[in-house]
Each structure stands twice: as structure tokens, then as C-alpha cells.
Image 1 (tube, rainbow, N blue to C red):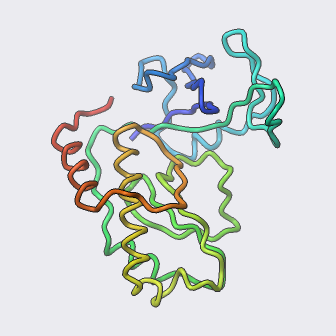
Image 2 (image 1 turned 120 degrees about the vertical axis):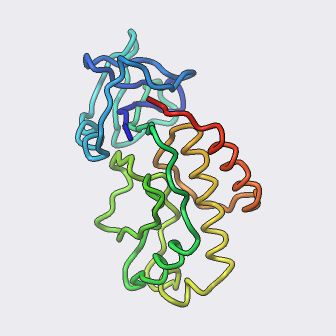
Length: 212
């Protein structure tokens, strides 16, 4: 598995190169020989700490701004990352989601994460910081506020909650595999059924080719 270091703000989209420059990849996000790649998500995070003004192809952008002027003329970029795989990964499971929710501590805020290994995990918030460019995250769900009963054994036994979380997560997993995207955010349920998403995943698996 390889990760890239990227900058985007809707459009355009840039990827860090081995020589330290940035390549625009708005329309073609496939991996190229010139792209800088990282074997670990933590290396992407380490390389995503520079803020301030950056000129790319004659245009000046503010990178990782503290705040955005909605009606101003400034152009902004935020850090992101794509992931590329040689082997088709294992699929997330409903049983592992239930086990993760059941083990949660409802006395603290929790973020439900589906990571790039296909596993669900709960990250306590704080210290979890959603602003860090961490491409080990495929999708994070809306934070479960402490005391609201969204984690723990009773939450894991609530079938509708578990079904909604699983189907939504699996759709993001499918998009992750298809488009290489990471760090999606989910606060709504998908309109697709589990059967539809599993069918799309099966098509991806049958047509899978190593991405580098």
C-alpha cells in the first residue's frame, strides 16, 4: 500500500512530486512515476505540516489556512492523500463493527473510524484531531457525544443503528477502493441497499488490477 501527499480545495488538485514540485492531477489521479509516495500514513502526516503561501503554476495559494474568507479573492488549498494498493483488501465486516461499538466507553466522545485495513475503530475525541492529514482513515462518522448511548453493549444491540453505520461505511469503502480517496466524512445514511453495494464491490474485486 502506498500513500500520496496532495493539496486540494474542490478544484484544482495537486500531488507532491519526488523533486518537491506539485503536479496537477485534477482529472487524472492515477499514480505516476514522478509522484512522491509514502509507505506509511504517518509519513504523509509528517509531510503535511507546512502552512502559508505557496505558488503553483503561477497561482498563489494559502495552504492549510486557519480561516477562510468566503467572499474574498484568496485561493486556498488543504492537505489530503490518496492510497494505492497492489492487492485487493479484505472487506469490512458487520461483526467487527458490532464488536467495536460494544467495547466503546460512553463516558467520552468517540469517533467511529473505518481504516484502510478494513477495520472499524473508535478514537476518543480528544485526542483525536480531525484536522490532521491522516490517510489511515477511509471514513469517519459524526462524533458520538458522551452519554448519548451510541457506544456500548446496548448500542451494539440496536439493529437499525448498526445497519445504518455498516451500509454507510461500506459505500465509502467502495468509493475508497474505486477512486483512491481517504478521510471522507459521513453524517447521513446512504440511499443504496447493502445488496447493491456488495454487488458493486464484487465487480471491483473481479476486475481488480495492481495499482502500482
